[in-house]
Amino acid sequence: MTITTVRDLRRMLPKTYDHRREVLSEVCMVLSQHKNLEAVKDKFVFNDGTVKNLISLTGTVMVFYEGKRYNIPVCLWLNESYPRSAPICYVKPTRDMMIVSSRHVNSNGEIMLPYLDEWRHTQCDLHSLIQVIMAVFSEVSPVCILQVDSRLVVEECSHVILDREDNLLFCENNETNC
Image (cartoon, rainbow, N blue to C red; front, side):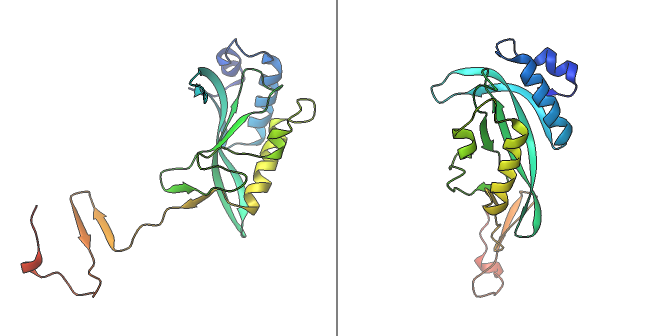
């Protein structure tokens, strides 16, 4: 569920959060500075199978990679103990993107940064985390665009046209009706 106002955020922030005021304050500040992120309440499944309703900051962060601007889709989950514990962060590729594994992003899209590993609630915050993510992804992109094979063209999902390797047209005698 998307949260749009401070009042909605306060009402929808699960009561299980240990530091509700700090979470509210920090999330509101980040949302005012990063217009492509929104607060969302949703179910998060931990590696051990535990499911909890958590708040996330979901959307895109802008990076400049090789001189061009890109919007990288991310999801920053805030655990109930936040800000005493680091967010759980993922790159969330769209269907036309693929994750590029690196030392900062695993094949599941989990973002792995020293900033997260060394999280100290008195020194670390969401705004700084987003700045670190933007800097790292400006050096090594966590996603790439999936390339469509130009020899395969799908038109309205009703039939497929294949190009021959010898660039000759298929003759009527070669066609197969399925």
